[in-house]
Image (cartoon, rainbow, N blue to C red):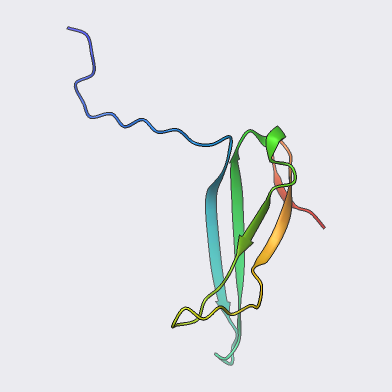
Length: 86
């Protein structure tokens, strides 16, 4: 007998997509200030991703944004690395 006997899920992704996001908070010794490092990886065809931008916004309790405008970065994509453009 041939065929699939297990549940199979198929899905499609666009040519360029947000593949992974890693956020690492750090709190200063005074417990008043901190920083947030965010690494975003774009997946898909690297040759089509040049010039894409990733934006992020941090929100306080009550849905109030911390920044007037989202923080963004343009990314230069190479086949082996993802580097933020200057």
